[in-house]
Length: 255
Image (cartoon, rainbow, N blue to C red):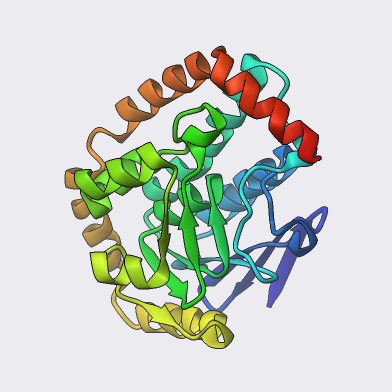
């Protein structure tokens, strides 16, 4: 097994054709900082360039997959927000454009940018306690990281609008019932079953996997790049509003 790490916030392991990228800030519920996004970018680039890897697992240590925004690392202005959004978009574009199959296995809180990260994967595996939350509007901002696009394409416009306009959430049971995932498992077996699924995929001819992913993306992902450009501009516009400024003052009081 080959293992590498960047400041221990993101772990990258490779073994028998499977790469595992693990969010590793359990004491912070794996909240996404600038350095974590950069580490994810480096890990994804490493995996994409490695011809020995066919399947990628996105996992997280601790009780939650990702608590969303790191309150100790809040942006101060629109330019900083722009950088954050672009970093998230680049992470998720790397996943959807990668010919390798990406599985996200999530548990506990899966909030904001963490939910967007999970939705960018090809296959979503959820622990029975997982909860996808989309609180963007409550912070006076718009959904980022492609989450509005992923939700509409993978779940449908009506449900996506309801979730995003209300800052709502989906339990694992909801996600299964609505067709966002067909895999909900006991939390104690989440990572075991994610690795079992990866091994099942390795038994399928690699060319067939890659061509199938590419073929499906031509339909559901055709407008993704255009949508992300619109998302970035809408997000930056939202950061200049009084509603956003008020929400941020509330967050800073929580620090």
